[in-house]
Length: 91
Image (cartoon, rainbow, N blue to C red):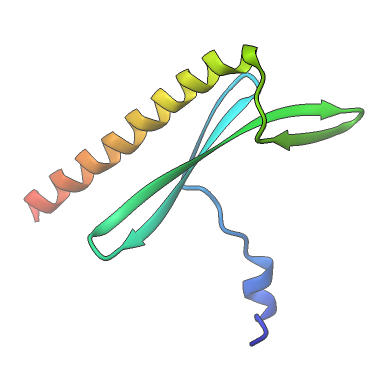
């Protein structure tokens, strides 16, 4: 089945991004039977000539930043879950 031009031009976007230096976390929202689940992807951003590129490969010096970005992503996801629980109790 062919996608409409509107669907093919529409690209899924993360609900939140966190970036420290050249390390970026993208937080994705997925609806499941029990509510919303979040997944996180990590990328290293670098410049090759005049072109910006992204990689999912990390060097030794990237690891401390990955830990910090992962911690910030965890905090953001946790806060979203708490906000959702508060809204449900208020309703």
